[in-house]
Length: 302
Ligand code: NAP
Image (cartoon, rainbow, N blue to C red; front, side, top):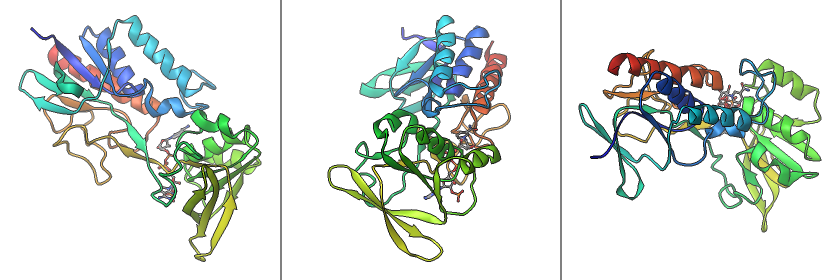
């Protein structure tokens, strides 16, 4: 007979890893399903300064330690994609790739978010040839070169400051003249060598075999300007990966709605982390969500 897990956790970012930690320690038989790499978007952060207990830690190291903590409790990792859910009353069936299935009593969806695309000419064509969504992954390829980071949030400013250490010249292109990023990051940006370009959006990315130029449009004057760059790092926010199951209630931006114990509208399905509708998306809040969901399940089924 096929094994029935108490809990299947979909996504091995900080929310999923913390949910697994709390499930395992509560005596729940849980499994993590991950379709790509452990750590989710958090591993793309070069320097985390607001996860309590660490003055500085990079996202990869933090997530690696979370993974090791789960492994020390014998949590199994299944590297596969959860495609759909058949929501039985006592037992749920997750359909994975190649018609494989996984049975469980409860599901915690911790599928995170995916970097948003600019949607301009040249962006898709030059992915991996100058267009990147991850400064920590690809920054090294741009040592001594000229790059632009697009966006005005925490990710964009952190990426620009990270790239400043590698590249010869870094532009930060933002569609407004005020940052969305935390004040402390804005102050660091102001005292860095990063060159801000305000009130501007990317109209086009061009080159021959790789990126050599971006065309910017000033949103106040509609003026178009060509700027020579070797790399364009897009950091304009994320879209929630909430399409895993049909029927989940989401907010207007597609983030999954839950109650305070992370219950979704689907019986036995919980949601935690960046994919959840909430006011603060941080590693620490993702971890907290995961812990709350696991504790709620433990109360319900043990
Ligand atoms: P974000 O906070 O949503 O910021 C996205 C930025 O991109 C905004 O400045 C936005 O402009 C701009 N933008 C959005 N769509 C655009 C478009 N089509 N064209 C040009 N610009 C566009 O996203 P994020 O920086 O990735 O951060 C996501 C979440 O993770 C946030 O909650 C953030 O606080 C958190 N985070 C935290 C840390 C940290 O605490 N260390 C680090 C990274 C991320 P507007 O400002 O005009 O809307």
